Image (tube, rainbow, N blue to C red; front, top):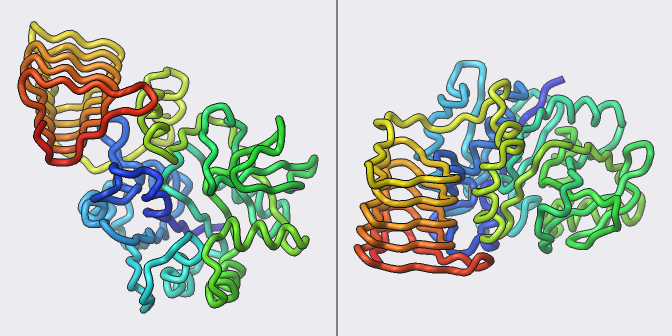
Length: 372
C-alpha cells in the first residue's frame, strides 16, 4: 500500500497575522533553523511517501527558494515526484477559500499518480509521525476517511477551524464538532486525513462545483450528521505543537527546549530535514552569557541571552540583553539593547540602546527588514 502526500501551505495565513504578511505559513521559520513545512515534508519522506504535491496560494517565493528541487528531502531522484501546485495550476480564476477548494488545484496531479491513498496535511502542526501506521489503521477500519488526532487538549488553543472528535470502542468517530470541546474524552484533529484517491476526487468534483470549500465543515461535518460518511480516528500519542496563532507559535518555539518534546520530535531514527546552509560555528565572546536557549550556527554572541531562540547569522552585541525572544536569521542586536517577549523577524536591525518589551501573552513583532 502506497500513499501520495498533499500539503496545504496557506490555510492558516490569516491566523498568524503579521508573521505571514510576506510569507506563507509553510515557510515560517521555527526552532532556530527550520521552516514549518520541513516537519510535515520530512514525516512524509520518512513514511516512504515519494509522490508529494504542495498547494500554494500567494507569497510563496520564499517557500520555493527554501524547497528548491526537494533534494534535501531526497525528492529530486528519478522515482520521486515533488510538485508545487500554485492556484492557477488547473486554470482556476479565483484564489481558494479553504482546503477542499484548494484541492481543485491538485486534480490533475491526483489523476496522474498511481498510489491508491492520499494523506492530506496542514503545515501548522509539528510532530514526528509515521503515516504508514495511520494508513494501516485506515485500511483495517474500512472507513471512508481517517482523521489523525491527539489528546493534548491542554496544549492547544481552540480556534474556529479545529476539528474535535470523540471515538467509540471500535475506533470510529461517534461525535464531531468544530472549535468546541466534546468532553474529557475529546481528541483534537491535527489537520491530517487519509482518504482513498478516487473517493477524494469524487468529493472534490461534487462539493467544489457546489460552492463548498472546507473539507472539515462542508464535507465531514455535514456528511457525518446524516450518517453518510464513516470516519476512523487514528490517535497519535506523541508530542504535538499546534501553531494556529501568534501566541501558540511564540510559546511552541520555547517548548522544544523540553527534553521529552525535543527528543521525540527530533528523533534521529526519523530525522527532520531542512535546507542545508554552510555556516561557521557560532562565536561566543567572553562577555556573553547564555542560558536555556537554542542558537543556530553562524552567529556572533557578545551579550546576554535567556530563554531565547536564535536563528542563523545573528549578531548580539556586548551589553545587549535578550529574554523570552525569537530572533530570526540575519538580524543584528546593537550594544546595550534590551529585548523581552518579542519576535524579531529576518534581517532586522535593533540599534544600540533600544528597548523592546512585550507582554508574555502578547509578544512584540518587528517586521522583516525593519530598523528600530
